Length: 483
Image 1 (tube, rainbow, N blue to C red):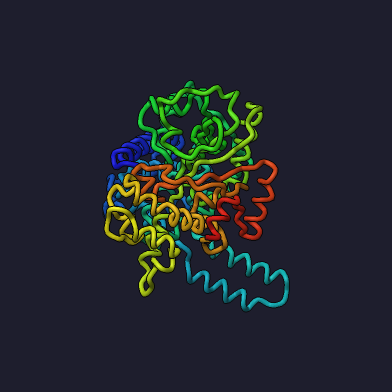
Image 2: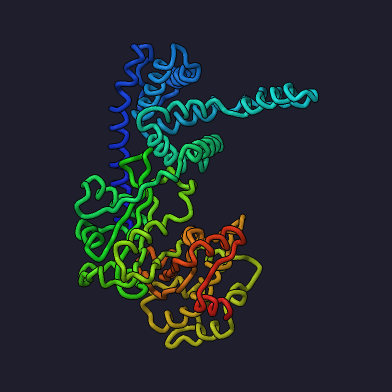
């Protein structure tokens, strides 16, 4: 992704966020008005120190729920509208107040633990002490977040709030704790059983098409012509929606229909290529799967989302026999760079076979190079001899990375690999220089991978991966792993 594309995507996302905030302010205005003027005016946009005490008082008023349910709801709406009216610096300070001032009362926890330890053998006495401890371990901020969730579009508000927290938590332990609390709440409230699959077409509402621009995270959409190409007759685009966020796509899946498994994304996205008759296609290629809501990151959407799209396509096109992806490998270069930078070892010897080192050393027309310096060579992918010398070692290392490198807990280190393996796919094929964009070279040395979904094997593959951590691979990948 170029800097310009990144900037355009950020601007579009910011525009959507601002529009969402404006809609929420309007939606909550009527609810907040039920407060009867009991609540003070909003603070300054940056939330200066002079306004902090008043904000704390309003938060306490919300938690005490004085005046009945209607008043409590009005206070929550007013507090939410204050947050929405703040600028980013003010919103961060708002959340810092919520995180620090309404955290667990650790003295109350200590007292509850002491009472539990002193509880006798009577079941009722022990149960009462356990309930008191559970209550003490619940920070008051959870109740305030729950009140905000109960407002119209409150769930959407909290999802966007967490998206901001994900950036701010990095250098603030209190905000990190608040983010974990919010993730726990969102997970408990989000029922994946209600996910609805909808097709997006060129005739879909403009507001939804605009969101495709903003949320496309794999291959940025250049312009309306590019978007129209992705929605042409031999393409399909689907999105998953949830009743709690009925107008917001959660995951967007883009599919190309054609003949055989695709191995190059530039060819796949070529706007000048002829449009195929989709009824004659034998293969469906999933070339982009984007999580549209950063605030829902870390929440499982279930294991068979891809299978739902496969079922939809198979029902529409009877000639489809093969369902595969053309996927990025976002973590490969970062992993390889860390390996090559490990101190105290000759990592070139550790990582490369003798024949690979010899091929690099004998590269025609140039000085002998190492793997590390070769990858740092400008435009190395356009130098045929150098690219040829790099092909086998990089494909072998990438096969190892995808199939063998694991995170704590036994899941694949690469997040895209983990997604598809958990959905029941197998690693089918590595494609050399399949994405020579700046982003593709930076992420994976230009390689992409096909994950294959064989309908009869999806469930067994899923169980093997989830239960045993077993990664199912094709014979071609197994051959690379042996060399």
